[in-house]
Image (spheres, helix red, strand yellow):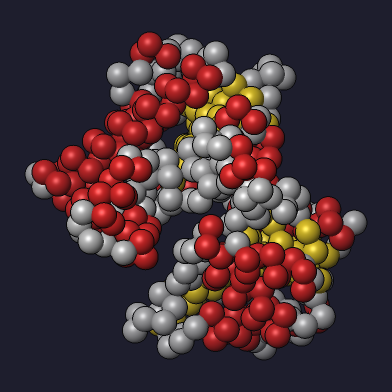
Length: 395
């Protein structure tokens, strides 16, 4: 039995789970959020207790140190020493061309992750910080990196290559990489419990603050909405998703924005927050229900974009057997699921309203029995998927 601590470091948060493998037993879990802000908080759950505290957390190092202190707390803790932890597994968003599999972290791996900062500026720097801090806080544990891009290495060349001069792919490795791979892999595996046939055509819809959609054929990723970086595709909390490249040239050449300013706008000031002033879908749905036209339109645009991708992937795979909704919004927003699946009868999608409206943490079917396409809600568990990869690495 091994104790594996999984760390998912975001821009202002750290999600963590301490698991005993191979039994998939969660010993403790939690979240440090709003790092660096006045309302920073830590949430911690174990068999002994469930607590939430508002505390001062200046940076990611302080956050990880607080996690370690809670895990070893004499009354609330789950371990007596950091040496009890065998492996620390890290989620890393962008692995570029260099990482198609899970790897042990060494100086060379760290240098490569650092070199990829520009490809995932909202994620890789914070993933890297999590690695460096964990090395100090848990010095004797093995360190493992699990890459979001790895699951998408099976995407064929016709789908990952861009129609630009070949030299950009051959010399600069500019191509579609794909993201949220750990989540898409997890729910794809879980969906097998609902599918009777061995061969299947599945569309995985990951909707959170970051959103992506993946075409999965016979268990393998064959296309994906994000591309070279994680700003493309669906409309997200603060990211624009698909945009005509000409808009960027116009913003720079005619409106006078710098490239850094355009990047800031597309990554942090667009998407739902750019259209409504809010990135939290719960607030947007509430205001839309109250008649706020901007919020209503933002929801319509969000659902419409997802519909288009479902249609295109169904065409690319010559059909679809299963659609899976996952992640915070995908799991909890019955409103958006309904908007997406509405008027999709040409694909044979029929949603059962009472099933769709049930709030649950269970894997479940929300389509009618007569629906030709099975529609599922499967709560993602990236931390468990990372723990599995870590356990396989050390064995």
